[in-house]
Length: 87
Image 1: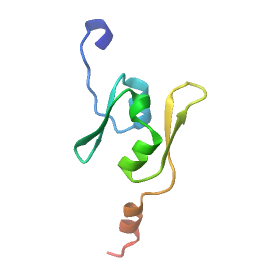
Image 2: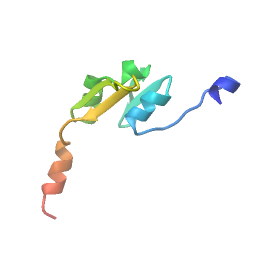
Image 3: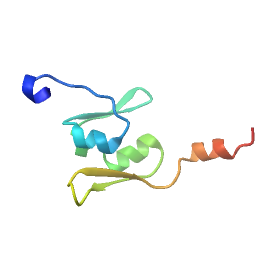
Image 4: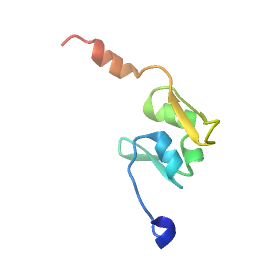
């Protein structure tokens, strides 16, 4: 639709790999505030994603598709604390 009609199309995606594959431009939000805005490869960096999500995230290129890929390393500490705290 964007190419055929020269209009902007917006989508809210929570899958970072899907966003990188589909979007010409991404906006990364954290707690309702814009962290970064631009090309997927400029916005979805390992350091920026790690800082935003509070968990180590590696970013690389898929050797088969050439697309940006993300990989979460470890677990989120606050989630582990909630799960291990007795009710």
